Image 1 (tube, helix red, strand yellow):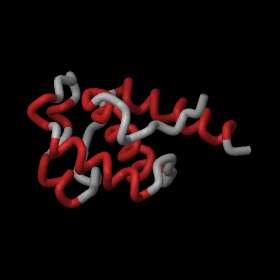
Image 2 (cartoon, one colour; image 1 turned 135 degrees about the vertical axis):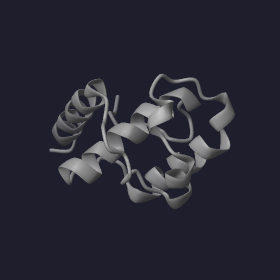
Image 3 (cartoon, helix red, strand yellow; image 1 turned 135 degrees about the horizontal axis):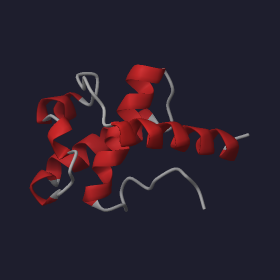
Image 4 (cartoon, one colour; image 1 turned 180 degrees about the vertical axis):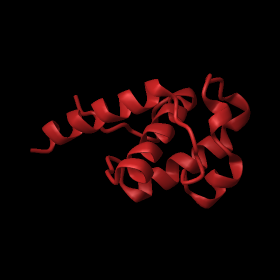
Length: 97
């Protein structure tokens, strides 16, 4: 099993954590797990499925950022997101050795 998510297949509610983790890794840690194409697709899916998404960290996500395909504007990440992102990246590195 891979740590790389299938952006087209995961539930819309799981897109929020992947968006936040990806943004944290890229903009705060200069690391990336997702390909740019998958990040863009994730942003589009979140926008398209916005009204169906129920996630406690949805308020951290701004539609204008999704439209621009960025997470640069996120100021404060939840601690759980930062920890999960670091673990995700570590597992991704191991998987890609």
